[in-house]
Length: 263
Length: 225
Image 1 (tube, each protein chain N blue to C red):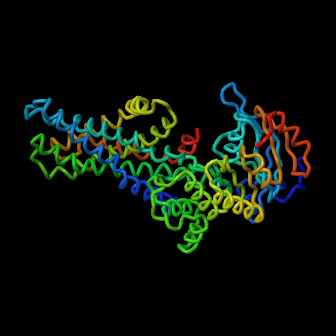
Image 2: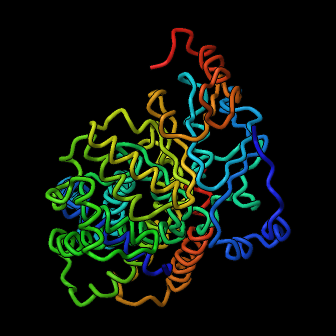
Image 3: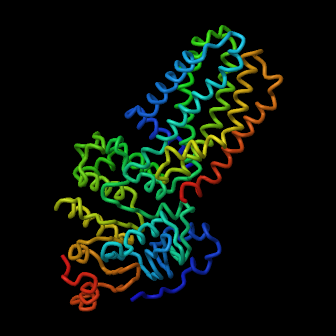
């Protein structure tokens, strides 16, 4: 299960807040989730969740509809506030009000987070500038070429299909290189080529030490890519293990929420 | 990225979107001029009553027109959950507030540049030399409206009946601005001087400064909750 890590200089100097973050900027990110809970009114979407993710890990976040996958992703992205518990980045409690911490997180929502009436290129320009990056036109053209949108750079996003929008999102995060990348059901809109592109990008991110957490119902595909599986059921963590071959514990846990078997 | 460059980037994005869609500006412009015509034909004002009545009519037109603009202010952010993308980014929320206020102010000024001369013509006001002072008062009032309006628009952003809720929340809080602007407009139309209404003018300027500062400070909390 979760391996506790030795306290780093960052853990020792936790009281320094933002200053600590600057000290640790060059190190790969380690994410620790401690007793995390989220309630919407009287409904607990997530209860007492503990996770410890090391740099370079890729996590398959699985569970039936309403299990709390999207809630967990939104909490990790800082788009939602926990009711209880905390999220720590390198031992520093994550507060969405700190811009430098937010800059380390990426959320790839397949067809969302793009301005419809801006062109492909303008969207990339806007978001990269927002993150304080200014990639050269050549770098931008290269990324667009990789995702197959080079010839549509001047087109409005409104004219793109969902799959194309997802490809543009991939291009965006390829340029921004977040240290924690969260993906919410990315496979649904992508064709075969798009899936290959996404998986290549995610493998590249993990190789650089980034953490990837992917919520999906495409179980076999996501397990093929990821190094760890986490199963949520009714807001509780029911399974959390590194990938093994064979994996009877996973089969048992997965069978409990989906008795008819996976895809 | 500095606060100023963030504001400029967001403003560039909003202006580009408005230039392409032309939703807010055209709606505001036509509604503003239409209201002026309605007021002109509805009230048969005697020349001695024009100074008393018309500032309130004009400001009412700006208030309704501006509310239309405010209802559209976060439209682009609601599409495709772009607000989440902005909140996820390292963008300073104060910059977000300033950019939205500046964008709204720019639209209002463009509308006012057309509506005020039209108002002069429709109500047979001959003192064209008073236009600069009149614009100054209108600008101070408009800044107050845009600052508070942007804040309230963000507060009602996630509400279901936000179009209804926005004026209900905004108008009562706007009373100091409405009163001060109308008093100052009356004074300009009567004498072209601010002598008697200097306290109202100070109130207007203070309102602008206080709510602009408060907006920058609390927008982080407002937009997240």
